[in-house]
Picture 1 (cartoon, rainbow, N blue to C red):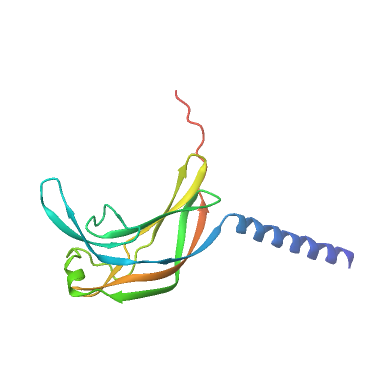
Picture 2 (cartoon, rainbow, N blue to C red):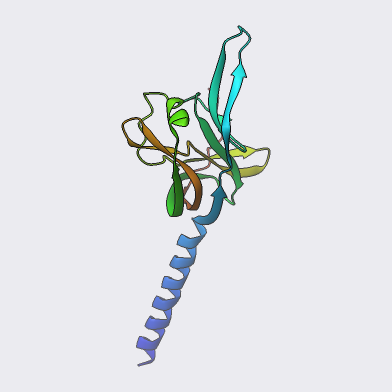
Length: 168
């Protein structure tokens, strides 16, 4: 009987240790974002050409669709993760008016928001860089803009540290 008891204790200890190790390899962050959309903004380029852009507070303009505002945030994390999982816990959208819909490029056909997260270093600090365009197409020529979203971002795989390179 003593032998069985010790086996169970070892098994429980092993399970507890394994679960702790798995938990150490991930990090979950829950964040809520709200978007304060403004009237479209006009921008005049150096050549005198003027164009209007959709805009919200803290908007940045990215590479995929430079005509559309993107959201960007650097979130401090504990480890450099090579993979993230993003779950939407809650979201609220609003129909865009005809003027706003005219400003969306015809090639933009995103039916759900593509939340992109990558890790990056800034000096010795590690960040999860979150970016996305907070607009979705509902039907041809009709769009909705994101008013608020609560995200659960989980770092899944800790990146392997790179070894020292040898120069032969």
